[in-house]
Each structure stands twice: as C-alpha cells, then as structure tokens.
Image (cartoon, rainbow, N blue to C red; front, side, top):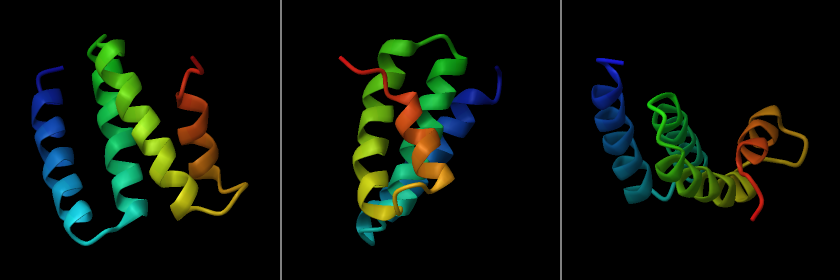
Length: 79
C-alpha cells in the first residue's frame, strides 16, 4: 500500500497529458487505474466517480465488445 499514493500521482500526470491531447482511450485507462487504486485502498466512494468517468471515455474510445471496454463497464455500479 506504500506505493499507491505514488501510483495515483503518476496516473494523474498521465491523465493530464491525455486530456491535453484529447486521447479518450488514455483518459479511460488512467481513470480506470485510479479507480482501481482507490478501491485497493478501501476508498470506494473515491473510486466510483472515476469508474463512471472512465466508462464515459471508454464508450467513445473502444468498439463494443472490446475486452477493456467490458472490464471498465463492469466496474461501474449502477445507481
């Protein structure tokens, strides 16, 4: 768990770069990884909005049936 804060920093930096270049696939992956990291830290309330944002970008970046899109979509709890 010691490395999770460093991972979050790296994912945020990568997200900023992907946002700058309008890379929806990169944004989806960065947000998804940030959500997984918060989930691993036991912070589900912080993870869910990231998963939802990741799902939004994944829908525009990946084709239906893409395994990554399916994985991201399955992380979002409806509600």
